[in-house]
Length: 364
Image (cartoon, rainbow, N blue to C red; front, side, top):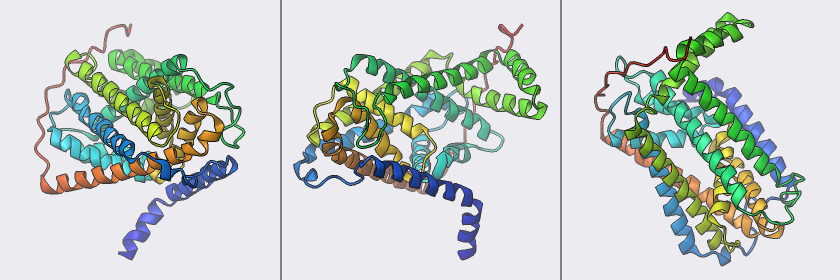
């Protein structure tokens, strides 16, 4: 046992040290900003716990919708039962949350692949496509919500005591939209015009290193296969519909929790901004449990619409309860996923014949 644990520590020493450094840095930022990690005294006594219960239910709905929609992404590659998709997604969420730097993203490819039927690269492509599409949708909705919702006036030039302007939020939203949009365009080009895309990539990056150019082209081409569902509207529209429904459930959860902790009622657009900023936080390399990343993202979002005094008081209760409930739900669904995997063995995959990809198109 000791040898096994020692081996684990040696293999992951760099990630663990980097995680501790990240937590230390974020903790220093929280301390400098006087942003409370625990709810300020007296704030929990005024909480409406029925709102907290409803918020937890809405967050669970948000998670289940996000997990269930994956069936539409994987359908063109393999026919996997909804039960197994949910079980693997439950476990993957726990690993993504509690392992540092999003190492858990490799869980689904590792658990779903089957030798000779479904490669890990094929599943990785669907996971990469899911993350990029989420980024495009979330950052796009964030920009739209920012244009609709009116920020608190005057917009504070600090968050807590942290000398960071709340105006940073819309700038971060625009940057994220550009990054995710560019990633989606690159994957789409590799999917529909892969011969041309490979040729351009190998020529441009080949100036620096032919080996790197080949590796990048291979990787992006594998990931672009995750977009195989796009031409089929029978799977694309349900996937996007469930994505928007899950986003709506998340926004409603934020609105209900704000009411429950006696913050000023947030409009749907304002709640969307908070969810979008939180999504940007979740997209970053994380310490275990997304500890402090979630807290800082929520404080930044609240600072745009809530007066500074309430951000560090009622807002402290809001941030604390959101984090505790989120982590509790992650643990719950992870345990359920493990029990489902233990109870039901993995079924044999039915792999459809892949449709012929049009790699000619505009490649000339």
